[in-house]
Image (cartoon, rainbow, N blue to C red; front, side, top):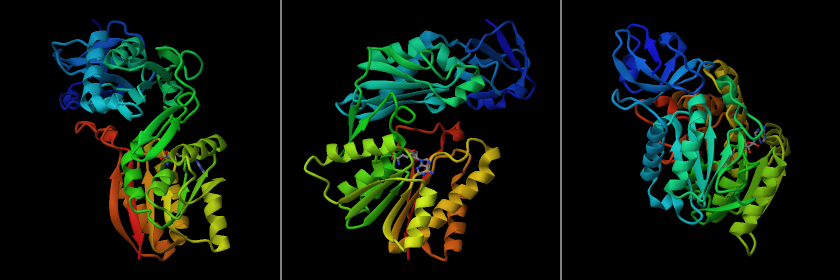
Length: 399
Ligand code: SAH
């Protein structure tokens, strides 16, 4: 087998079970390896450290699969890892109308692999050359674990760094079990949602905010709620189910809002228990409009898309987060609640706290932290892979 030899003293991260080996740590490749091929990883003296997938086009040159020198990674190894990951979620993941992340990439021992399950249908995102190489084994393992079918949603830009296609049949389409339904119904507490696995964002739904939605919903009773960056209504539905007086969902995407309306009708077939509004607008502009009109709210949710992909974009992202939080803070009535989130991995919890504190300072308002949220438990973070922590939330009360 082809061997990637690390430079002297660069085996430390692998020994600590970190899955990424950057190009600068690789001394040489002894043999040939194409994208996604498994290579033996050895320290400078030639001792086997484990086995990983080769990514010739990426700065992350090797993604470790097996840290066991006696177990080379092959299709059977990957299938076992998928089965173990699914087993950690428990049988409830395949219950009718459940929505669960079954595989969360590096933290589940499967670099570049995401698999979400909606009412038994699995949707995968394969972001690395190694993940792509084992596509068939992954799909087969999901079917063996109980999936009704497997659909590929690997239309992610990060694949460009890996030299992989991001469009067409190579990136999207059914992998097993035929075409999934147009809309798949999932339940989250009292809330029901349709998931569009073909056209939706990511794999179709933001399962990572499940616990945050429950937290916010439990605080919503009697409140006039503005749900910014609503996508298909998630937080707004939780607020309505939690007894909100009014819920307004704001998003730039008309199709997302159309599905949000459908989700309100699905959850509340007799009509929503509160006043509702669906506003297609840029949140930054809309918050300014509300300010100019003197409109106030007693709950605001800010769940923006990722503003920073890399540490290099962090400065600009920081301005974006501060700007939007400042605008929202000014619109809160005394006692009002702001639930604000950042899904940028590059934005640490500490920095996010500071950005919010600066926004509060500029808004001339005082806030108390009444809860913190993080990505749901089916999006675990391996202790050896802190990069896996990306989604953090602050629930603040204006005094
Ligand atoms: N809170 C949602 C997920 C939000 S994803 C849930 O729980 O399901 C982020 C959303 O922000 C996307 O729907 C995207 O269309 C929207 N978006 C991105 N930029 C925006 C902008 N400037 N103004 C309004 N919406 C925006």
